[in-house]
Amino acid sequence: MSDLTHTHDAPIFLKLGGSLLTDKTQAEALRGDVLARLAAEIAAARAARPGLRLVLGHGSGSFGHVAAARYGTRGGVAGGAAWLGFAEVSDAAARLNRQVVAALLAAGVGTVGLPPSASAVVVDGQIQQLAVAPVVAALDAGLLPVVFGDVVFDTVRGGTIISTEEVLGYLARVLRPAWLLLAGETDGVYDAAGQVIEHITRATLPDVLPALGGSRGTDVTGGMASKVAAMLDLAAALPGLRVRVFSGLQPGLLTELLLDPSLPQGTELS
Image (cartoon, rainbow, N blue to C red):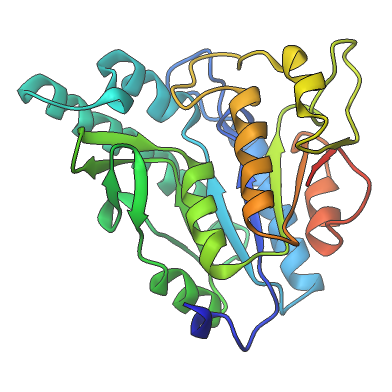
């Protein structure tokens, strides 16, 4: 796989959280103003650094998670009603993706949505294969490839859901980003006193786990605790990868971090 990346700077991976883009307490409630501003901030970063290689993933928020929770899709799919639910979740996730792509295009960013369901080979919830070549081709063309949490066919469960973090984690093993930036609606990862924790490592994770709790609204792929643990596992598997959790609600911060991800903002996981 190394031939895919040998001639280029390491890309930056960015995830826009579903709770940032939508109100997860209401079905399909897009925060259009937030999305438009984030798209403009991505456009500003690309204008300031034309060579920026960026892979974007976004959560499903109140689009995919509500339908997925209703049908229990992540646990497996069997029977006609469950497969109809699978199709409904697919449509909901794709609807949000179209809105994200449209917002980026409106901001002048050439963007292409790449649904994981079209190419993923998944065995009992674990991604075994995912098409990386289209992501690389988009980057080489100067486009912004956008992936998202999606339904997938699963050789054991029939169907399931893979999270945006799982998709980006698979791609990261091939494309080796230097940074994975996670934009959410909080200023970082909070401790029990509500203060931002500047740095979390695998060694300090047990100390902070009790404070992490779940997530606001419906999230079938787990809350903050599972996301932090998964990101630390990914950083351990990919030496040199650094992860930053920060607020996408703070105007201008996304542009700053895309231009310099090492800025001491939010929480670093490594």
